[in-house]
Structure formats: C-alpha cells, structure tokens
Length: 67
Image (cartoon, rainbow, N blue to C red; front, side, top):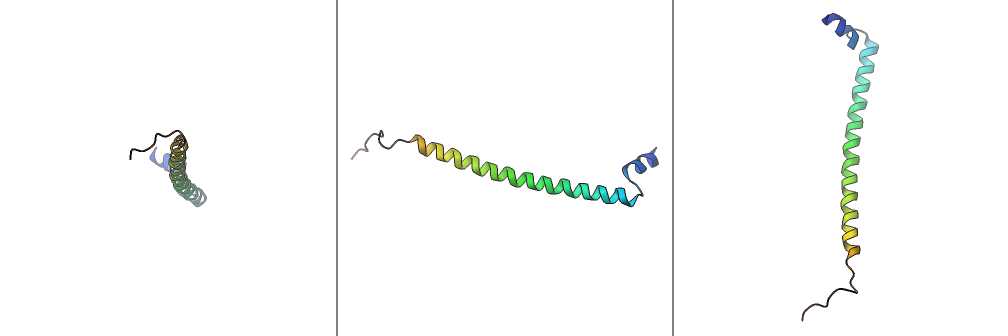
C-alpha cells in the first residue's frame, strides 16, 4: 500500500517530482503575494478611514475655542 501511495504522489518519476516542486514554489509565491496585498489593503483602509474622519469635521460649524 505504501509503495502504491508513493508511486501515486510521484515517487520516482522525475517529471512528476519537477512538477510538484514547481507547484510548491508557485504556492509559496502566491502566499507571499497575498501577504503583500493584504498589508497594502490594510494601509489603504487605514488611510481611507483617516480621510473620512477628517472630512467629517466641519470647521465652519465648530464651536469657537475658549479664550
């Protein structure tokens, strides 16, 4: 059974091993790209939130400061 599973996964066929390595590398590349895009999205979300807060403050209707 173990030999059958090993053969199914790509035990000795160099083409299957090369394809498996290529796919593993592609998965790693996509995971790192996803992390970068998520960080960029978080930064953009924080900037948009800050802009909305600043826009919600209306200086013309603000109460005068106490002197």
